[in-house]
Length: 150
Length: 428
Image 1 (cartoon, chains in turn yellow, orange):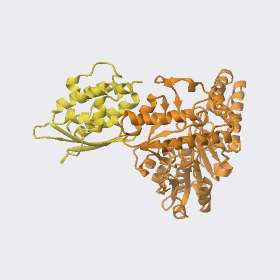
Image 2 (cartoon, one colour):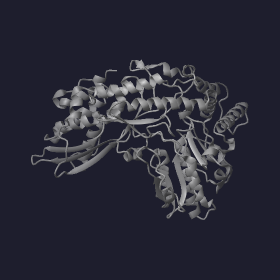
Image 3 (cartoon, helix red, strand yellow):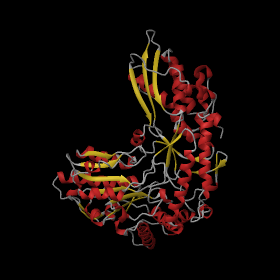
Image 4 (cartoon, one colour):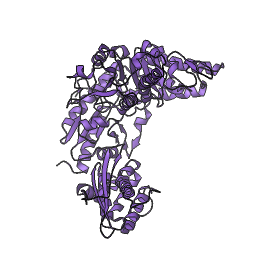
C-alpha cells in the first residue's frame, strides 16, 4: 500500500500546524460532532461578518485525517461567501465519495485536493468528512443553510 | 526468550488458511482476535456438511431431516455446555453475546413491569427506586448500556466499581458499592480493552452476600482459558461463538437452573411457548423459553466443532501459549519509547488483549500504518468509551493475539508500531 498516497505531505502539515483553530467570540451556532467508531471529536462554531461572509471556529481531537480536514475546511470557508463555502463543501464531499476517481478541482478545493487519496480508504472517509458534516449542521443551526439534502 | 513447546503453532496454522494470505502486499499478521477470531477448516466443514446433508428447522416437523437437524442442534448444546462444565439444559442459545446480556437485563425490566400490573414474578427480578445495579468502569458497552436502560426504565441507580491506574478494579470500597440496595452485579471476566482478568468469584460472593444476582460477561475469557462456570460463582454468564473460532450469529447465556426458571422471557413468539390461546400464553421451560423463532442451527453446530478443535489443542496449552505471547509483547512495548500500555503491564491476572497509545499519534493513524505493514489491529474505543475516558485517552490501538499467532508475528506488530512512529516522525 502507498501510505504516502493517503498521508500526503499537505495533510500532515495541516495536522501538525492547524490553520484557523480556535473559538469565535460570538458564534451564531455551535455544534459538536463525533465519529463514534473511533472517537474523533470536533466542535464547529459559525458566524458571519458585517459583509455576510462566513466565520468558522473549531476545536477538535482526533486522527490526522479528521484534524487536517478541519484545518483545510477553515481555510476554504473562513471569510468567504456562503456560496463559495457551499461550493467547496459540495466539492469536498463529492471527492470523498468518488473512491479516487475523477480529478478534484484545485481552484475550488485548494489544499483539500490532498484528500483525494483518502477516498480510497472507506474507513477513513468518515474521518475526513467529520468537520464538513459539522460545518453543515452548524450552518443549519444558524439558519445559514437549508436542512434539505446533506 | 521462552519457546512454546506445548502448542504446535505451525500445525494449528494449517487449519486456518486465511492466515496464509497477504494484505497490502505483505503477509497477513492477524492480531485482532479480540474483535473476532479466524475460523478453522473443521468449523467451515461442520456448517457446510450440515447444509449439504441435514438442513431443516429444529424442534418442529416430523421428517427425517428435522430429526437430524434437531439432534445435531441439541448435541451441539451438550458439547458447548460441557466445554464450560455446564449441563445442556442450562445453556441458552442467543444470537450473540449482546443478546445474551440483554436477555439478562430484560429479565429485570420485564419482571418489574409485570409486577406493577399485579402479575406474579420472582421478587429478585423486581427493581425500582432505592435499588442499585453495580457494574465496573471497564465494561464493554454490551454490559453497560443494557443496565443503564434498566435503570432508566425502573428508577434504579447505576453504580460502578472504579479502576486503578494500572487497569485493575479498585475494590477498596467494595462494601459500600455492593450493599443491601444492590439487586444485580454484572462485570466482565476479562476486559476486552485492558486485558485485565477480574477476580470474579470474589465479586460474585459479595453480590450473593446481599442476595443480588451475579452476571458475568465472559466473551474475552472463555475463548482463551479453561473456564468452568461453577468456579466463577455467577448466576448468569454470557459469551459469543465468533470469538472462540465459531461462526458469527450465535451467543450463549448460561444460567443456574434455578435462576433460569425464575426468569421471564425476553423475546417472545414461536417455539418458546407451552400453550397459546387468543387471550394469553404460557411458556416453555428453559432453555426453550428464551429461544424464540427459528434458531441458529448451523452456527450452533459450527461452534460445537470449534469447541472440539479447542479441546483437541487444549485450553491449558492455549492459555500458556497466549501467556508467552503476552509477556513477549509487553516486554517489547516497554522497549519502545513513547509507547504506553493502557492496562496491566505485567502478565499477572492478565489476558492477551493489549491496548496502547503512542505519544503524538492518534490510534487511527497508528492502526493505518500497521495495516500498511500487513498487521491487523483494532483502533478506537473498543466499545468501552468510559474506560478510555478513565485513562484520559480518546481511543487506543489494541493487539489481541490468539492460539494461531507466533512470537514472530508479535515482533512484526512491534516493528509496525515503530514504523508508525517513524512515518509520522514522532520519535527521534
